Length: 278
Length: 119
Image 1 (cartoon, each protein chain N blue to C red):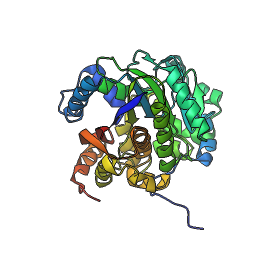
Image 2 (cartoon, each protein chain N blue to C red):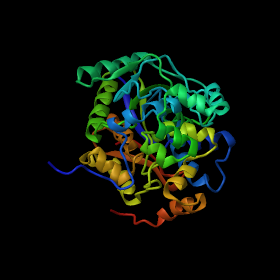
Image 3 (cartoon, each protein chain N blue to C red):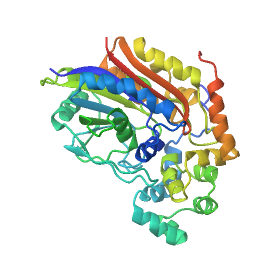
């Protein structure tokens, strides 16, 4: 049976992709962020996962407002990155694992999640940047992308994203192949790009959220989406990706392998956290 | 009924905004393509007409008015592609929306480190 050995989450700021392409990891601005990945990569080198399930939000590469799914699951043999319009280099394609994608899809629909399935799916920086951060040599394992709408309101509630993640976790646990799986939650933490409130950051909320991810992971599901926007910013709601990834890995406590929190990268309170099965 | 949840300086991009901004956002979505970006650069007016932008959307594009683009239904993720054509990043946008210089906006971000550690 497949098993989830850890949940890894990180911010996915596009400028990170630019910094990687330019080799700026040791520059004073970037070093406090990139240094947070050393213990994560050491853990991955030990655990050697076979599969990564990435919970992320598309920012207008694969999906436009003509068709905007609340939850979409990739079921492709390969996922291509492409030009997003503002200049970070396009990465080579990522390999999929369609048989696991379909096991997840079957389980989700059987559990009343009316998802969209995608046999072709472009993946944007929210998918590619975390994989490049955790596997800088480009040797990321095969992947299943799970996309959550954070573009157009109404967004799915934090509670619903948690429940969706739990069901993905059940599908993985029931998958009849001996695979080690990690989940990734992409995005956050607090930040707001638009409006007069641009630049909003909420450090005490972020630090509390990181604490609760260890042993009280449903804490943030008490809040409505608008409450989360108020507390974390319009882009801070990306923490629903973290919740889904954490839910897939375990409903109970996990052990923290490492954590990093740094203000600011771009307009964002940037965070990275690796949790392993307790 | 409880009053609607309002957040200062923030307009959630909901169905009303998504309808209002559809043409503008569709144009900006097209900027994923380098060829489309080039076509826009060569003749912005013709490009805006082709996408059916309304008066307030076209005016906000002409003036590079970020808050005007948001009010006209623009969504930040698509507007970012327009900003990319202009060579602007999200800190330029942040500065423009808050009426600060970019340096002051960046300094304000750094100053957020002084926030308390606990809720």
